[in-house]
Image: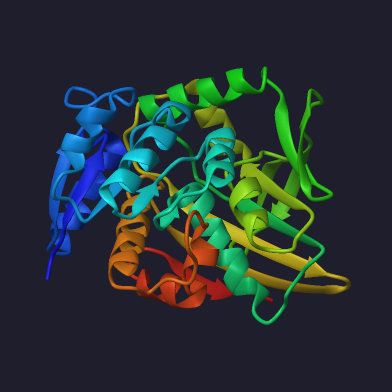
Length: 307
């Protein structure tokens, strides 16, 4: 039986993908945006969520929308999911907590890597480090991505973020360019290209060091901000290390914006059907059975262990 799911930011790129995914799965989207309810209008948000079983927030900058939408979800007594890739906004959500099930960063950046690292860990209860390398064929950012990135950079005064020794730190130095051996081929990547993973992964896993790497082609595409045409292909290569041992899991697919929709909608379905492990705010790997979640999306994300 389908549910009525509110989608904030439904007219944006990711929002449209989410609406289509909900309809594909037999749910009824309740689309709304700033024209119906701005984030600073609690009464309008409450009206928008009336009758909804859950809400998916796809409207950035999430520094502006996440906490007000989460509060509205609490007042409505429904689960909350967002697709935020903003490091600071995600940290704010975890710090706030919630009285309802809430999953921030349930998207390509943040949620996917968290699921992969959690699955790669297997029986390990801790690890020394986690490394997440993004082998994108390119990156044609949406207007929403660019605006969210600007807000995030402004919040940290243009500094870069690292997660080391169990804490976030901020730096002005130039990131390194490295060669990363992906399963298909070696690519040049920019090291310490921190994404939401530096918040989601350590939120529940005892890993004191989390490092992201981004393919140079993707970073150049982000800087040039070219118009979105051909969707990018992606390889996300996760390596978790403990002492001399390494566990590795790799995911491949196409279109980082489109793939966020099944990630977010699958999360909502699991929250509404009782298939979750945590209460309050929790990342994808903490909230759900990571291997089972990844397996359920095998038509759009192909995950496999690598040697």
